[in-house]
Image 1 (spheres, one colour):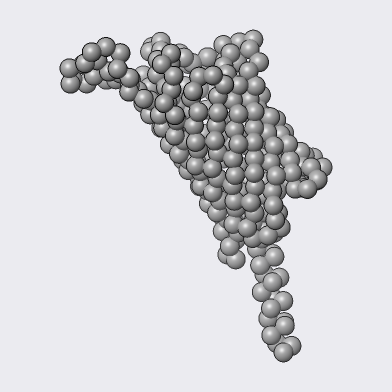
Image 2: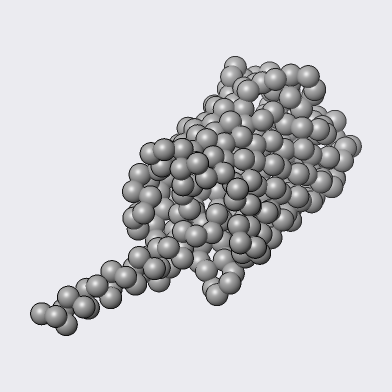
Length: 278
């Protein structure tokens, strides 16, 4: 009987230690902020966008291509609240080159800030479920900000295995005021620590509704993949280097008899993100 009890205690201790290691990094999908815990996230990155518009006339396809470079910076703050909840705010600054295709509207400057909230259940368990929402209000004042208010609401779950592997699945509904470009995003990720380093791989599919007739080109589907390597660099700081690839397919539109147009945009980016606890 003593051997059985000791064996059960050893297994339980091992599982708890595995969960603790897998949840320690703020880059883990299983990470949950503690009450009154504040974390800052600062990201700097570079990217290249490849624009590929096309036209079809009388069955013949005409295609073109152009590439522009982008530099961007993102800053976020998240604060843990009582009851395993949190609130956050983030903003992005981007400097994007101009494309020769005028109907692809690229502008520089700050985006509208995004305010977010999250609630997690069973934060110390091997399976953690959360509900989350966000709003990006239309503030105006610049071309980049003169867009409709964006709302999102979603649910997700993260699971930690005995080996320390973390997997997650999330479904989010994104809604825009007025213009009909609502979408549903489904994302999945895998995270595993190898010694001092954490490796994460994630993917997302975002499917857009039919856009309103006043939009010349509207997105139909966005596919993205992100691969990141992170490490603890100080007592309260973690650093991640990540590569992201995304492919945006635009809806084909008929603009005249036997004349259609569409487009595809691909983006490759590299970014470094530093997350610091206060």
